[in-house]
Length: 295
Image (cartoon, rainbow, N blue to C red; front, side):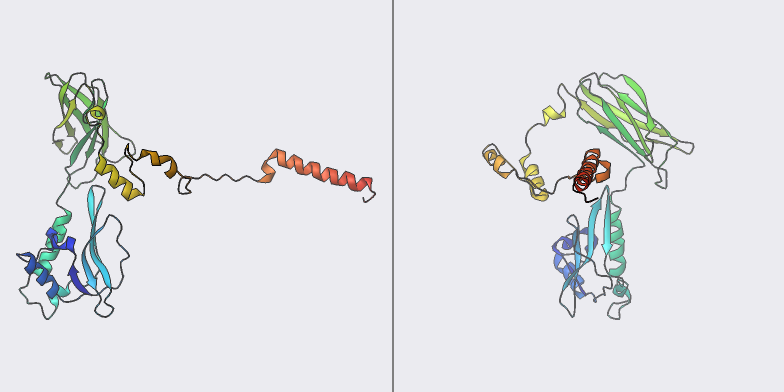
């Protein structure tokens, strides 16, 4: 297959081999073709194809390089097995750095968002007075392996400057996850800083802020976000309604078999009413046959 940039690949940082867009695309077009042994399937809805291959004989297009976010990370798949030809092919000069540049930039693009060893999240971030705020911390060691035997505590500073310390407990069954909570009473910004201590070292997470207001986030951000709702409806096969079009809702609500259906099966012998009914029928038949002299 001859390797070609897709529109998304042309602007991706990992695939920049030239100083300008024209030189970059020309460099990719000049690279020797590669081979595909295990053909990739169709890209998933969330995947982005950066490189595609055009079969030199079939002229069919195949995905070659695709990326997709996975959780807080990023996954990448390269559907060819001989990218070394970009270094060892007779048409490639010995001093050419295309192969090295491609792999160096590709790996670096996967590691551009390395998480901290101690990460803290709070929910909700805009609570109301008296509303409990949940704190969750995720802890890893220097090798980024989850740590379960650490001592964590949250230092919480109120808007008036009063500080209190809340211990965080390990969440059983969740590797490296510690949880705790506090209830804000004052209006203003609460500053939360989590500190962890183990037998090896100690860490201090970046401070987090909970903004406490008379009314929580549900009141402050209660406006309708129409673009988001329209996108959700399009991606999930639903429909978006406004006050002007809501009168169509009763007509659009129809039964669909795509929901959750629970099927319950029972043996006839496990149902006393049917069992007794069968015994009654057999008894009636036997009595009828006996009355007619058939038995």
